[in-house]
Length: 79
Image 1: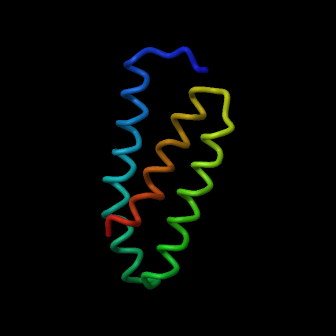
Image 2: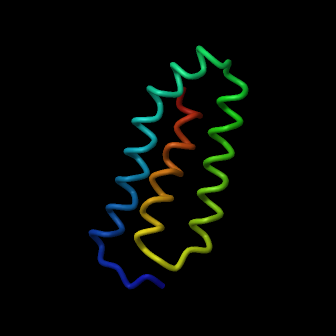
């Protein structure tokens, strides 16, 4: 129960999509260098870890940070 406004909820979605969009470009270059499998595993682990932390956090600012990191981790599936 965060008691936040609708604007804050929009910010959560926007930060997730921003991380998803920006990381798609970076994952392409990284996967060319390291290979696709290790990059996919690292991105999936970042997504999983961020999701678990988002489940248990009680502070909205921490939720914003890890929601952005969740988008970065999810961006590995877009490449």
